[in-house]
Image (cartoon, rainbow, N blue to C red; front, side, top):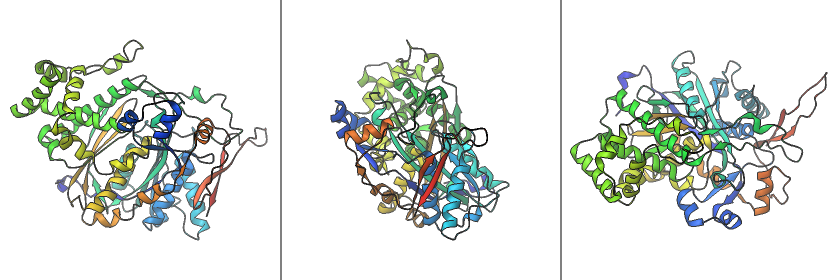
Length: 495
C-alpha cells in the first residue's frame, strides 16, 4: 500500500479514452503477402495492426480521442487548464497541442458547449515513445502547483510506420489514447515520489532525422511518411538496459528488496512495441533481481544458468559490470549483447514454470487485446492500461489500494518506472473507458489497399464513412508573398 503521508494531495488518472483508425491488416495475411513465417510473427509480434487512413494525421487522432474522453466522462472543458500532447509523429515543428485544442474547441462549440479554458497550457512532449509519460508527469506537477483544483488532459498519439520489407514492418500501428488527470482521482493514484528514472544517449537506437522528410510528394494523399532509422537488436539491448537502470533507481528511492518486491506485484503494464519486448524486458529484470537476492533466489538463478550451460558466477559478474551500451553503436558491434550470459539464462528461464507465474501472468491483463493494435509508440502504454483496466473490471481482478507497476520507455534512450495505486470505486471510472468499443470498428485491407495506404497513394474501395470524428479536409499549398499556408493542414469535424 502507498504511504499517503508522503503526498500533500492524491493526484492521478480519472479516465481513459481511445481512438484507433478502422483500417486493419491481419498479420497472417501480411505473412502470405510477404512470404514471412506466421507462427513466428504470431509468437513475437501479435495478430494484426491498424493503418492510418488517407485523411488521418496524428492531430486528428489525438483530437478524436480527447473528444471521446470529454463525452465519456462528462468533462466540463472550461475546467481543463492543461492539455498535453505526447507524440513522436508530429509534422509541425512549431505548433503541437494547440492544434488539438483548436479542433476540440470547434467540436464543442458546434454542440453548443463551452470550449477548453482559454487559460489552458498546451505543451507538446517529445522523447520517442516516452513523450506521453513525460506529459503525464508534467500534468501531475501542474495540478500539484499552479493548476491546483483544475483538470488536465494528456493525449498520446502516434503513427508507427516502417518501410515495406523492413524488419519493423509487422510492428506498425496507429492510434491515440487520452487521459483525464485530477486531484482525488477516480481510477488510480500516480505515485511520482516512488518512481524511478533513467536516461542515456545511445546515438542510433531509434532516430527520426528531419532529412527523411525532404522532397516528399503529398499530391495524392495527405500523408507524410515517417519511417525511422533503427537497428532492431541494438534497440532491444537499449530497452533492457534502461529498464534495469530505472528499476534500480526506484529500488533505492523506496528501499525495496528487488526479488520480494517483484514477486509481490500481480499486474504490470510496460511499453509494448510488440508482444515479445515487454516479456523480455521484465524477465531480464527478474533474473537481475534474483542475482541480488537471497541464497534461495541465487539458487533459482543458478538452475537457469545450469540449463543454459553458463557459469552462474560469470553471470553474477556480468550483472554488476555496467556495460557502456552506447559503445555498441558501431556497424560491426550492433549485433553484440550487453548481457550475453544473462540472455542465455533467459532462454532457459522461458522454459520453466516460474516464467508463466512471474512474467506472463503478471502481463496478462489487456495483453490479448494488444495483439490487435500493433505499436502505438507513446500511446502503447496507456492503451495497454486501458485494455487491462477493462479486463480487470470484467473479472473483478484488481483491488482498491493495489499497486500496479508501469514502465514507460523511449528510444534514444530513457525509461520511467511509475507505481499506480487503484482507488476505491475505480470500477465506475473503468466502466467508461470503452476501449473495446474503440476497437470494434474495423475494415480489413487487401494487399493492394494496404500497400497504397502505406505508400501514400490513392486508395480505392475503402468502404468507410467517418462519423463523429475529425479528418484532414485539405493541405495548404500557397507560397506567395502576400499569403502562405504551405503544408498547413485544415481540418473538418464530421458529426
